Length: 296
Ligand SMILES: NC(=O)c1ccc[n+]([C@@H]2O[C@H](COP(=O)([O-])OP(=O)(O)OC[C@H]3O[C@@H](n4cnc5c(N)ncnc54)[C@H](OP(=O)(O)O)[C@@H]3O)[C@@H](O)[C@H]2O)c1
Image (cartoon, rainbow, N blue to C red; front, side, top):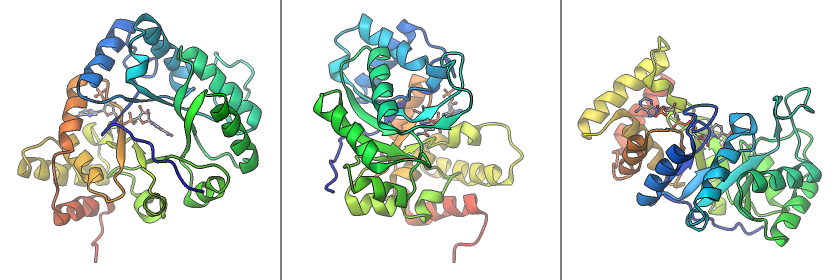
């Protein structure tokens, strides 16, 4: 299956921590944040139906309703397939996955309504469903594509084998996976190689390890990462977060980070990080700080 190359902005802005699960921005705060991102050339916003216990899409939708010129300037990714027990979903009795045709279509319809838009740029299956039927997912994607409701499709947290299976039936535009100095699996399990092979852009969630490297910690791995990261920050006249993003950006698969900050100055600093070019030795210094073991 030939994969469609989707053009992302240099950094994708995650919305998980902007609403009820974090900064609790009201519409005007969200507007300032989104407008500032756009001024920097960042027009990609990453959602999921579940964020804020099913409320953050709606928060964003209120902004799109109040400022109708915004929709055409941005790209919206959202995700479906996790059923999260929540007072906003009283029918769910256990956290579970559902990638049935009916659930995907209903979830996309809900997202369109909450986001106050008539199309989504990218819809991802949020996590692999052990009961997934690739034919059924492909059928759902086809229906959503033909009706003009969704432009592109992809997955998140899929293993290379799961990606391959679904990609045989429907072209996938990305695998959004956890990649950071704290979480190295994708470098070793074939995920990034697969993206390179199919010319697909990998997108990295929690690129700063969810902020763990900045918090008080006694974890030896975090302490090692922080020590080496801060040394490199001095060397490159940068900040620790910039070094960690530059580290991801150095990979030839052209990883695009999905950042999670709610502070606009940190968004700016993340974008500036893309100008930092680490030497290969410094890249491996950070790798070693994470694994704690000699490389060769
Ligand atoms: N597909 C999936 O399964 C999945 C899973 C999780 C997340 N996501 C997506 O990925 C996005 C990013 O995830 P994430 O929020 O975990 O990413 P992250 O960028 O690794 O972490 C963001 C956290 O780090 C803090 N932070 C950033 N820079 C800092 C600094 N210099 N000093 C101190 N704290 C700093 C932020 O706090 P401040 O707000 O104070 O800056 C925020 O709490 C989410 O919004 C969501 O869109 C996807």
